[in-house]
Image 1 (tube, rainbow, N blue to C red):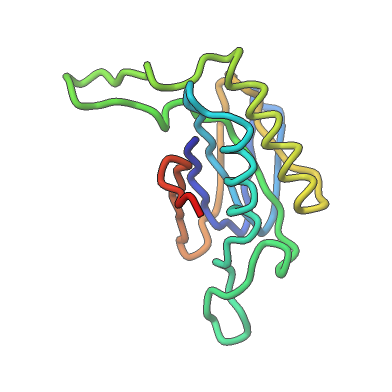
Image 2 (spheres, rainbow, N blue to C red; image 1 turned 180 degrees about the vertical axis):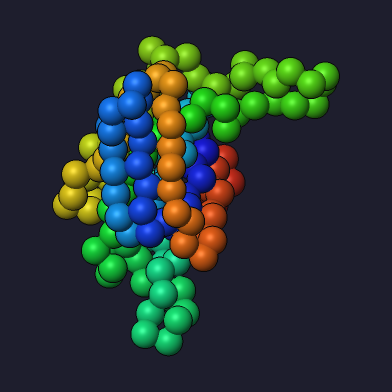
Length: 152
């Protein structure tokens, strides 16, 4: 499972011109699900996301987590995070999970993040043509992959 966290001062997702998710300060997260991912990957990643200390403290240092600043989350499904680009110029997405596998894990992530933050998680629509607008804050962008986690 891969996530791209972007610290934003605001972010909005639109589908067919209608807003499906909108936040102020917080994380705009692109989430990619791989065929071999499980709920254990979601559990680990959700914990890491809410604990990530990338918001500024009174000294301007990145010492505060999402809860410390009252931040929100906009979570967007993004199968293209698993693009393979070694051959040719047309990416392959063979490693990305199919919807029957990806949707339940995406929904589980929404629920886990909501439990951990105590807040509603704003979202896009899985598989839709989404238009994302955001104001990157920093910019701060963190790429996380559950295949890179340490096993202790």
